[in-house]
Amino acid sequence: MTQTVKNTILFAIIALMIIYTGFAQSWNSALLIIAMGLISSIMALGVNLQWGFAGLFNVGIMGFVALGGLAAVLVSMPPTEGAWSTGGFAIVGALLLGAGTVVAAVMLMKRMAPGMARTLAVIAVLVIGFFVFRAVLDPAVEAVEAINPAQSGYLGGLGLPVLISWPVGGLFAAGAAWLIGKTALGLRSDYLAIATLGIAEIIIAVLKNEDWMSRGVKNVIGLPRPVPYEIDLQNDPSFVERAAGLGFDPVDASTLWVKLLYIALFAVVLIVLLWMSQRALHSPWGRMLRAIRDNEVAAEAMGKDVTARHLQVFILGSAICGIAGAMMTTMDSQLTPGTYQPLRFTFLIWVMVIVGGSGNNFGAILGGFLIWFLWVQVEPMGLWLMNLITAGMSETSALKAHLIESAAHMRLLTMGMVLLLVLRFSPRGLIPER
Image (tube, rainbow, N blue to C red; front, side, top):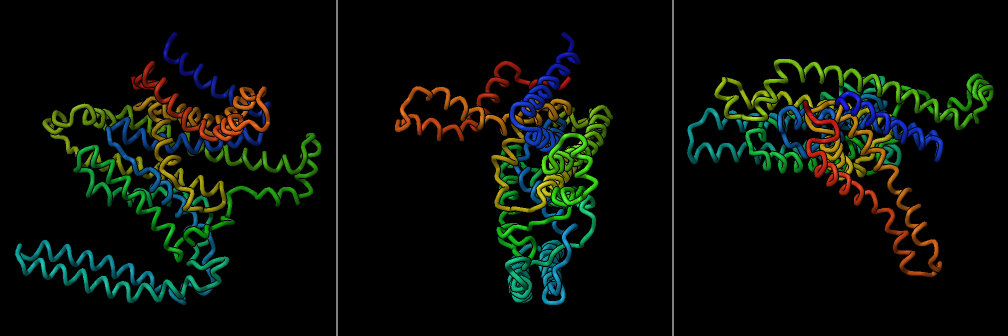
């Protein structure tokens, strides 16, 4: 069996499992799996670009995805009335003042000769700058957060079309990746992993606590959509008539149609990114990255700037994750910082890349669909299995109750088993790098 035939069979199996879900459960569930599978595949492509191409161990995926979600809010939501005049401009001024303090400290470090005088000058600039920064920021933040806190209490966004937020989310993630890369890419791989994980947690902590920016844990709901809302379709007489003519209930038809539109948008993004990733993989740049990944010392001896190339691919991979984060927030129509967990947005994406085949873009896509399907379907399958096992037990049995309650943990068990089986029987993934 050729590799092409094997790959086709693997994708066909995933397609058949999704189709079976449509018949056995509902087509809404099947289409949601496809939509989220497309987003997960885009995230896996970004991680594959970093790990599969260059061997960079990034454990901060969650932070870059969250920045993409923040971009969806800042770009598409309308500005909160009165927020900018009350304290918005003062917040921007305080942030610029904080950045200026850091720049001034760096300039002093560069221009003054090493010694006690330089140390005291830098400390003085940082301390004075911090207190001035807080003196300007805190009253402005309180003023903004006091504006109708139950419904807004934040600056809002620019009121632009939400599709613009997708590339902006990529830019946000790329900017954060540049800052991280300039400081952390010189570290060894294990230290890089720790640094990226810590910075991702800092990003999530900021989103949760800075209410003026994204309402924190109060969440931002009702984001504009690039497709119609279901309720608008259900109130459209022409749509209801067409749905009835095809034998669909208007409510079911509206949810199916919205998901199909999202799938079409996400598929276009995935195809474009896949095409670009494939071109990069087979270009001299891609071959240089793989050479650096396999032997950094030899690549440096050939005159390659390893740190600069690592920074490039780290920024590109993070930008792709940011785009996916903006897409996901757009589909959810809400930003919920509390839902960004390392298990879902870091560990699971890594499992997708490893199971699919690191270094192979099609493997990353296969892993994205397969692992997301299992993540969604294993829990109901586990509940069915536990009910089958305990069918003969008494309803008052403590063991039966325990086994049925344990079905929710089947996700983690299955992810571990799939990962172990793939690493044992196909260490390079289901679709390995050529």
